[in-house]
Image (tube, rainbow, N blue to C red):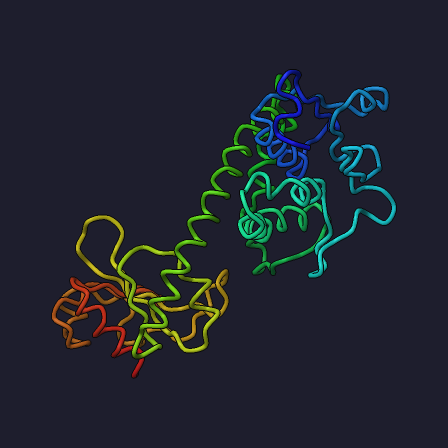
Length: 302
């Protein structure tokens, strides 16, 4: 499907009615963006309505991209990735049109890994994280779900919620592509900084570049030194995570630094402009680049 195919007439997307889910919301968002919003979207469980669709999404019991049918509820599903995460309707749509939206295989793959796969996993009942006691993360599916009518909202409809959250999904998808492109470009800068570091336990960055993934992929880095956001003039020391999306760090800063600020921290560290250390010891701040490097060196050698 090219993005120009339906320029003279609206592309008709049909998905199921009733309670909406994250996968078909994002499927419709992707197809809408691909066709520059020149679409009409119908929500129905009537096979006669399905037959009028240019694209059938998340309903109909069939996956056939040549016929523009993207469902995964049929017996046996619609396939999956090598990592075991099956395709939902969003994954199927992205599989075929992600490159056209993202602009390259590399960026499409990055968006798939960060956005599409978690949505597919959630829709397919595949756990990708553990829950600490009863405290669970607030997921994208939770964000989508709050737009559905609550049990006591008598004047709100499923269609109203679907079309309201569809606009949000489109914005999220656009920004996910922007983020993936930015992170890809930033990673090259971070890799160069790593290669240039004399002591690879401490990597100095001259800007707010995306570094978590790159640093976790190398065995040596313990800390990254970089300027604070905004125009504060201060510099941060951040501990490198064992895995990018967790809060487990390779080496936290010394326990004596925990929660200390200004004069108290300067006295303990011997760094005159030491300003702050987080209670959990994964972030410290100094008034200058030199001060931050000294703190990182002290922590690495502790």
